[in-house]
Length: 384
Image (cartoon, rainbow, N blue to C red; front, side, top):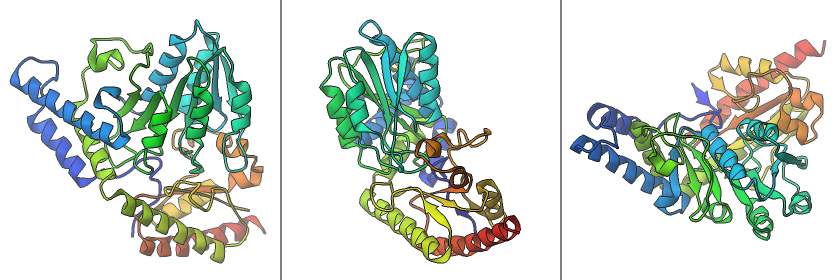
């Protein structure tokens, strides 16, 4: 039995997405900018997919622009948003638990003379709103916060943060919604923000495609230049097969949405309760309730190296993660768990289980059985 529990890293594409992309690549491969019929057909695909993504976001289609993925979307939003308001001020604010796509972009802006502030978080990774309120001033150009933390699953108070930010004059508010799109209703987050980043491969769509929501009236200075496509937000020939697949995935992700999320929550809770009752010496790093997204569960197995446990489970065709896929190949501790105040042993033994609509309770029985054996075997060796 193969059990895939690394869905926060990437997801298996829907069968319908694969078929849609294959059809577009085979028969509708024209350039959307071309004036002939094949160009018009490709342009129509882009237009229809934009409608599907905007519907999923509860946004207007004219506010949605396709990008090369979540990282590029974050870069365009943060670089473009901050630079467009640099005459007003150079203070930019984010949190200590953001994705590297945000943190590294803030470092780049610091080299340009911007002044970054990194907000503290509590033991579950929740951003300190009192600190945000105290840091906001007339020099603030941009605030960037993630909606759902990719390692802990914590749902951040992005709507409350938006109210604080809107009380200020001319501050761009960006939400990284890569982990929440397809897992939460996006209406309130989108209404609170000026800029929102989403990605295709986190919702059973293709890799290399994403979208950036830019609220009507928001002006940003995109760092990408070219032929003017996507209204100069992300110029370059459109990835029509990727866009088609992304549109299909967005539509399917929000079809029968409540039942899908309820099933995901059920599977997560089943595994969590099983681990709590069957395995000793653990630390549950995620919220156990709906303050965490149904898609993520982070648990530390004390006396165990997470990487060793990951590979032992892999031998049984069970796939998990020790943290963010975008930084887990680097040496050093998880910056997210460190910011949340975990001890070294707790960080070292942390495993992230991330779920999709396709996971089942029956799979979790198998996972729990093999997890118990693996943890016991590792502890037997390390505690001699």
